[in-house]
Image (cartoon, rainbow, N blue to C red; front, side):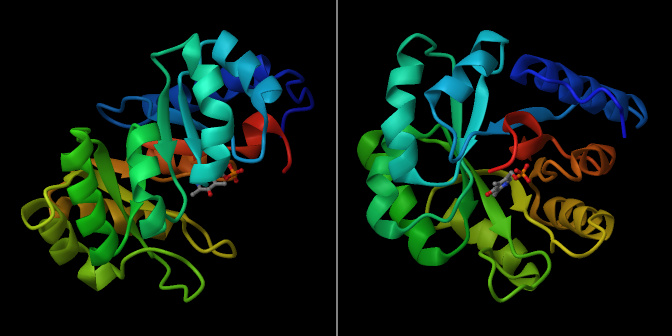
Length: 224
Ligand SMILES: *Cc1c(COP(=O)(O)O)cnc(C)c1O
């Protein structure tokens, strides 16, 4: 642990980007993953300094909360890319498709079907990730590991979704490496190229294991 914990959001951002680049430099052909700054529970005043420092990709886990803060923040920065990383209820699908640019939490047929229909209706064909319950935890969202390959195929062929990758949140109390490796293997089997994995405590491990994007909240914004 460094004795100089970065003080400002811009310093924390620079520190995390440097650590991601260093991790990518350790793997062959490695490119640093995109950083999705997870701004859930934080308001516009906490987010604005990161936008000023150049961060453009943000993640939120609730549709209603995101609707409250992002239209204003986005007005001056139309190049912001907003990821939905939390569970999506089918009655919020229309709002989610209108607001977000990437949906990371596709995890069941009914949701996939609604998303496909709504994207066609709004003519907004957003890239999507399938969320995998990689640790088979009953309290967590996500499709089961052994259903993932078939589900990805159904999302594409039956529901018309543009599935670009897989997303997971490994069990909190275990070493994440084997779960990240398993997600990478599943993505190969399903024929998708992107891996959304790694959070504040394990984004370097995820980068070393092939993450194409990491989702970092508290290491950027502070404790929630
Ligand atoms: C909150 C959240 C994160 C970020 O977690 P931190 O530990 O604060 O970095 C990442 N992914 C999802 C799905 C989340 O809900």
